[in-house]
Image 1 (spheres, helix red, strand yellow):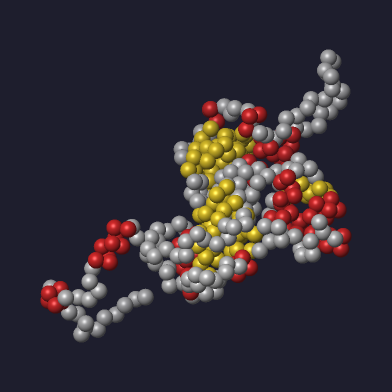
Image 2 (cartoon, helix red, strand yellow):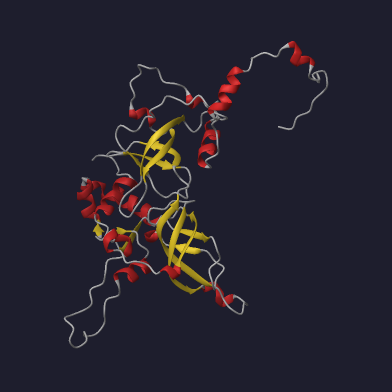
Length: 346
């Protein structure tokens, strides 16, 4: 590999061995880099560490991001002193819930399971706004990065409350009963809010990917080979935003070159959602153009907020049956205000 590795390529190495702590030279070998590229790799690792996707346990030692406190609770602290009489040695701690297989995951208690809406953060963690306020606190449920599971921003999720600790701001509060900070982990997604994601298409050395414009989705979406171009040329039943220059049709015999998509704004349908150690995957369903082209900004807003932009077939059929020009009878039934001065506020 002669170019600087992307974030997605580096994270793929960590996710193959989520429990391993890597040194720089181990990552250089795993990525097939030259030793002279270690400095460039270190810069990429620093960026991933700042966004909390990986964790620097000590100088130049990196591992997949699980919050330090969650890591201590998941793996357990190292026992102190001698083992008790009759024991065969120190207690072996279970793997963290985020890394367990579904068959070995413990069944949670039903008393501390709630549902709510997830609000994601660009650093990988999130907050769940419960459908009903939790007893003893008026705050949302904090979800660490390692406990997000397959959920994305906006999803309605089921959460297990794992602990509650006093809020550090409570010591400065005059309230009689200071509130506590509630933490939890996501068990499953009840309803998906992000079925499509709009972002910028990028060419990778090992795989192509899309970087979402919504920064509350902290995942790069991998695009498998053969799914870079949409299956349909372009939808005819658009409501608004169709004036984008980037919506031009390609010639029927024009060969599709993936390199043309570099830097393009695309809309992606998610085919696989994120889970521990696995990035989300998707297929491109629309190519909207470049970000500085006319009308593309409107297209981005429509898809980022999932606004309805398609007319139903019944409305299209009715519009096609209507004559393009007004008849004399229709003109007589209307009042003609064209001679009047009209002021508009656009």
